[in-house]
Image (cartoon, rainbow, N blue to C red; front, side, top):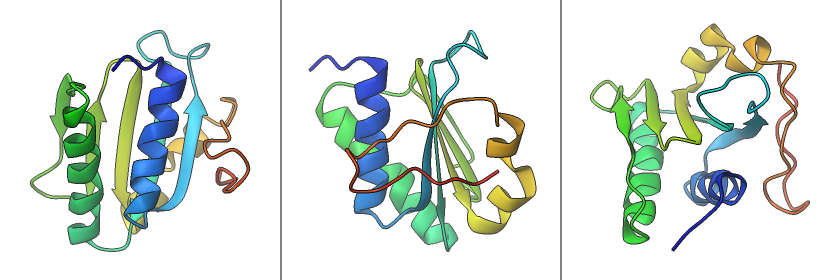
Length: 125
């Protein structure tokens, strides 16, 4: 299955939502950062939930033949980064997300409505 980067970002957001991720935000950073097009940022309340969210994303995309180029933070499960090339996923423990404030750092990036109006991307930042 081939997905464009926008569709992949939306799919990842939906997979995170299926595992009860909170404050799911998709940032269109393609014009601000040349190495990727989208950040998908979400939070889990516990390290176990962070791990479950990130593992589910990997497992479901792997079924479609989509594998990450790199992964960081899985062992600690406080901030897991999954690099899918044009889409980079950040799954945070809530307090880590509040500390690093990626949305604030990338506040000029447009937010993508990832679920056709059923959910609105978070307005954090």
